[in-house]
Image (cartoon, rainbow, N blue to C red):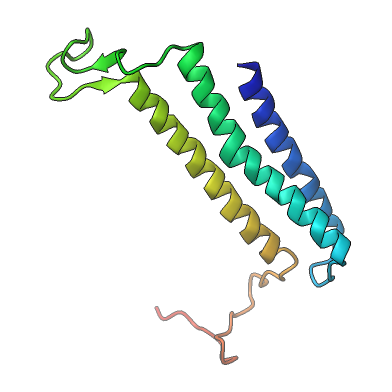
Length: 143
């Protein structure tokens, strides 16, 4: 349990300097070669933790301390809860679904982070200002 919590906390804590750095840096500034190497290494380790270490620690915790195995049936034939359910749902299946959720949250956070990084510094249109098309013409909503 400790390893799972620590790996998750370290993953989230490694994302905080990115937000700090993004607010400090102007959107058009170029990276130096050294900054690019450090940033790529930093993002690699966040990705390694989010997609490698955290799911592994969850699987280890569920297998060892929670004892979520194939023979632990939650519902279906041979269980106390919904014994007439047409197929068996084991604790191992739930464990694997949680891992898929961990991957989905990590992927969603990564996509949102990259979109936020790319969109930082863009001017938002004022309340009364009309948006324009790619050709420069104002877009007016009918009705």
